[in-house]
Image 1: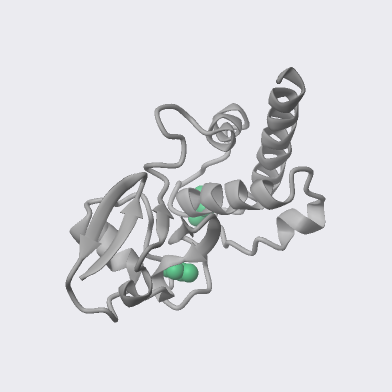
Image 2: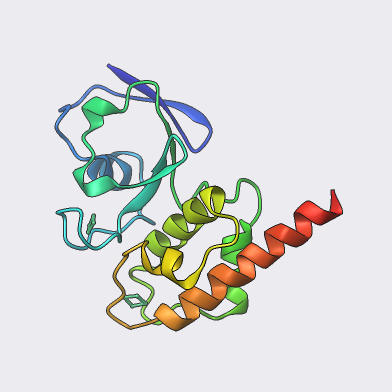
Length: 155
Ligand code: FES
Ligand code: FES
């Protein structure tokens, strides 16, 4: 039995330890916000947070989840919207939307570690978007960084 936290709740799994985290999230936990794109860790559509780091859940086996803290797009904002989600709405980022949960999770992780990211920092995320929303993603990440800065200066 593998025990872990999923979106701030206790969870467990006693199936195949080789099952990728993405399969567990979508097929067992009913959390379908994380998408299957390439299945080989290249596109980022499946990005979630594990212990605060953005990981590509299609290549992360359930056997490695013991004691970990997993957050998906469904749990990112807690009871409301995360600043990155607010910025995404304000910049009207998505086109088809398929890659966007992964983009948001990757952006939230970047901002946690790099509060004022440069264009190069943002480009280094490397999540793919077939619709080419990269300029709006860049603007939204900078908007979220500014919002977080405003929040910090108010406290
Ligand atoms: S589906 Fe996981 S990186 Fe593409
Ligand atoms: S919005 Fe369509 S793939 Fe990114």
